[in-house]
Image 1 (cartoon, rainbow, N blue to C red):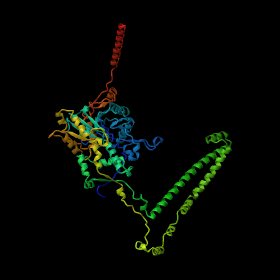
Image 2 (tube, rainbow, N blue to C red):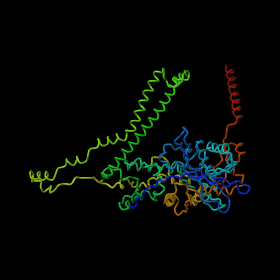
Image 3 (cartoon, rainbow, N blue to C red):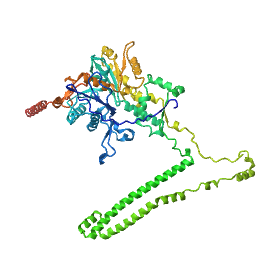
Length: 607
């Protein structure tokens, strides 16, 4: 393979196997289920106690679903996650329960949970008899949590649930055990990027900020760039391939402007450009085929046409024969004297008289006989048509001039004898003047850094938002100097959109520019930015398995409502709904009535 040429993998997801019955209990306590409910991917698994909690989550699938091809006509039901295989043919049918990073569609969320519980091997009958640890969005709306609690308790009958933020679970997994850390979490996912300040191990929700940009917007931006650059390959530049380029070929520039200047150098461009090879077929051009191959292809097309016509004739003959049998049965009713059934059958056939029935029977009989004769003579007639329509090739050779004719022409016109010393051979095949493989290559140069750069410069795609660096500076300015110094000592990067090479160096450069001279700071990247949220939720579940202060039970759900939340080190802040009291409304009504009475008395005195 040539240098810097990379074929698209076009990975197709394999269907998830239905696992055997999962662990039921550890001692007297049931084993918790851990669900990282992300807008890009759902990760589910068991939190098994012991020295070895187990490998990575047993189930990972895209958080999308689509209705089966059969739909409501008796076909397969909705397909979820990895059961969809390749997403591109179904892109227009895909639906997600998320609006940005917040689940809002209860029915689609139920499909994702059904898929997770079924493939994890939940063995309890009629309910999910396991505690569940579920991730939610930062500052999750109360309605979304209420909807999720209602689904889990009412539909699945779980005993208890605990909610937490995915990035805080990742922070929990990477920090030292039993330490109350402070820091700044930068979490960039598929739809959003969050900057979260942590003070003494708890989230400071009042100073959290969100940027509405993530991996989804980067993939869309990269797709528009390459479609403008290669308008001849619009259909081949799909979102799935753009996500593949982002995950495997993109990086964050430490200095964006300086990196663009490097790309202007031809040598740097040639050494660093990635040539993405699109799939193609060398047999698309007719000029590359020999005469034998053309003849063979023509025969195959005629054979397929012959089979198609024969199949259509047989289907039509079968339909006509069935209708003829039906009409003959009705005629037998008339001959047997069963007049009531005969008249009912005539009405069903939409006919008025026996004469009309006899006329239809004669027409169908002749049509069936003709169809049988056509089926018998179809092969012979097709061969005759092919022979008549295709001229013989020797007739074309007679039109070419002979050698004597060419010599006599040279005698009449000796001036051009030097230019035509002999007979030119006829041109048989015209080879393409360009390399077909090179035509189907996408040269990804500066696009490797342009697409990921949008989280630092949202103005590249026309978004009027602040980037990560400006948002970070804004949050730090809201704290005193000593708290700022404490926060920047632990800047933690997590999320699938932080896996670009060079992002840690870029964040260190941004902090170096915004912090005072000779001040210290430290940037840490999660050990596994994608799966650390699930690992942290598993560790948290094992550490708090018998702690009733952090779990929401069914009794508490029924008493305090679905939006109720118990706070812990990785949770949101509980903000209860405050409704106006009825007493205040009655007191306001009494005060207004007193005011109107006083106004009426004053008017009487004035009169």
